[in-house]
Amino acid sequence: MAYKLEKTFLSNKLRPGAMFVALLSFLTLLLIFSLFPQGFEASGESVFHKKEYWRIFSSALLHADLNHLSHNAFFFTGLALLLNGYFGLMVFPVLSFLAGGIINLITLYFYPPEVQLVGISGVVYFMAAFWLTSFILIERRQPIIKRYIYATGMALIFLFPETFQPHTSYLAHATGFFLGIPAAGLYFLMNKQKIRNAEVWVEKPEVVIDFDWEGEREGESVP
Image (cartoon, rainbow, N blue to C red):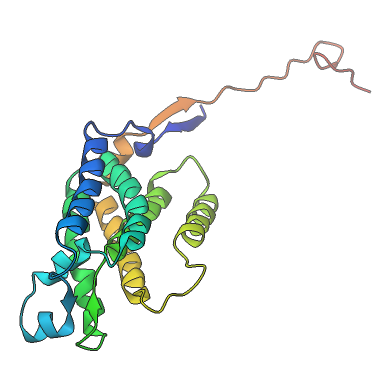
């Protein structure tokens, strides 16, 4: 008996409240941008010399200007909906926020101490890598090569910059992306049984070719 995979873990409906979490996250960014335009930035001087480690988290919520905020907020809100909707609060916002601090800490280590770091783009790249890696691991209705091609294409289209800006931290982007891949792999290994149990397999219809006694196939003439 042959079977085909009809549904996967990612075929389920989004968790109740996922839209609320995503919108609340967006409004939080907007509120912080409006009320605290500066004062919570992170730099090597403030973090490593003054030991103000809380700044690696607060700086992720700040943005240089409205254009910076709007660009990040679009992808951030969509990915927040997906990660919370399928993987729950532990992945977003908890893991994503903690990853933001680690990303900023690593990035600041390689920058001159006076460089200030703001923005949630490193977290966005972490979230995107987590989602794309999870898609490759979970969505088995497509062959693995197709999943890789799809994920690579999405990454190139949405994450690779068309132009390079001097004030953009591409190191934070790369750090976030390459942290998101093993994070998704670890999540998958820890929850593999639950993920596989969500799969729905159905019987594939058998193709039957009926020959009559004269050797003619139904609907066709045999020469």
